[in-house]
Amino acid sequence: MDASYVRSIENTMMCLATFSRSINSFYALSDNLQYLDYGTGNLVPYQNICNALISDAAINWCKVFGSNNESTHWKYSIDDHEDFRSILFGEIGLTNSEFTVYWKKMTDFRSNIIAHFNYDFFLEGSTPEFDTAIAAACSAHKYFLEHLPAGVNYTGPTDLKVYGQDVGRAVLNKIIL
Figure (spheres, rainbow, N blue to C red):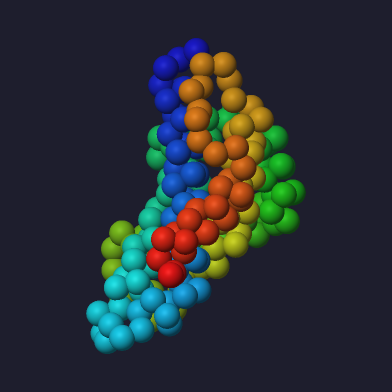
């Protein structure tokens, strides 16, 4: 098997795991911001950490689902695109056109808020919901695991949803005393 193909699969799965860590850490902290940032005035260190985490989550999601130019895009690691799309859309409960609308929101968020700062876009309050991104990442991760070719050295999580929940608890266990 081609070494670059194996590396592509390993890197794509790493991006999915990183996405899960970042978004679940974000949710764990953001649900407790009032407590965590209490008494910090306008320093708001945990809000800043949350901003970095949601940015990292969006970037890693887009590495797998965003531009076809990314070497970690799912299309480079999956041969049967129609099978993958059918399973993905079925599991997340969206049609292809509905997913495309969501995809546009995520890639616009990445491009206009995270990678570049578009003031008008920022004023619209255009942070997309991430439940769809989580569902898509979990579905893709499961698909990759079920279709891993021989030679892929994957040592990451086996269930992205459970992994993310564990990450969220671990973050709070060390912070909330």
